[in-house]
Image (cartoon, rainbow, N blue to C red; front, top):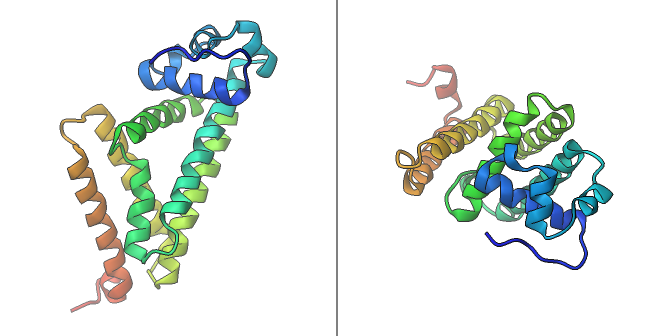
Amino acid sequence: MPERRKSSTSPDLLAAALFDVAAESGLENASVREVAKRAGVSIGAVQHHFSTKDEMFAFALRTLVDRLLTRLAESSADADPHTALFQALSQLLPLDEQRTREAHVLAAFAVRAATSEPLSEIRRTTLFTIRTGISTVLIGIGTPEAETRAALLLSTVNGLALDALGSPAMYPPQYLDHALETQIRLTLHDAENPLASVGLAS
């Protein structure tokens, strides 16, 4: 991707440049120097906005998360439960170029969050927000153990995304669509047949 050339800079421009670098060559290569080069600005311009590399990372992750959460909320508005869950959770899967790039960057941030408390906090808040949204849908239709099932559904999606990034030939978009549809259907089946979830259905 070509370098971004601007006469002035901003935190959002730098976050976009960092995203490009991380999506293409990994977060470990998103140095201040490389981000400045990609944004078409000086290192000093980057340091004017971010005193440390971790501060820059935290801003970039919050920017990506905000964009993602907005899409999740918009995609699931005024839809039936199955459609709402599918449209929202499919935003987390690498189903096209944009979502694949986002998934790569999110996976890289997830690894770095293990040793960065600011990134870890952003990730915890994000996962909690998404899980709460799933729980709200499931509670609304009477799904047993809605919060636990929401956590399991989100973990399934995150696992599929990670596997698809590592082995894309094994997890093409059509397969990911089908897997998500199946998991949602199984989850909603328990709402319609509550005794099945505790093994009491005949």
